[in-house]
Image 1: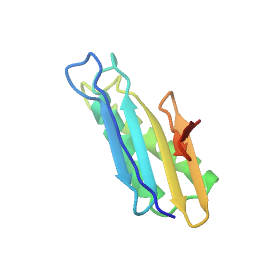
Image 2: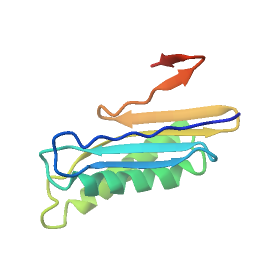
Image 3: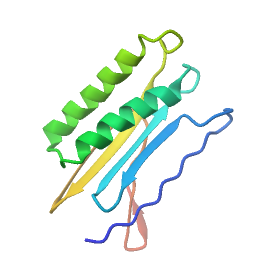
Length: 123
């Protein structure tokens, strides 16, 4: 199967972008995390979560393993909240792993995953 990917982030009205994207179309791994604005250091929270999810998706997890990856990403953010100035940081996240003849995906929060196929956008 040939995959192509397009990643887009927008910092909105903020002075910096709090989004973190990790993508490897050749391996079928796609992750986006979006720091929650107004909570401070969202870019740190999103990077922590994205790194955990991306690394874990490299083994093409089962749905249950993907849930565990999201829990590990949450634990990484909670651990990062122990650093002074990062106590309130938060993030949303969405991950997709395609391996062989199956795909698993999940999300926490309002980050979205879309599929564009046959000229149409599918939700």
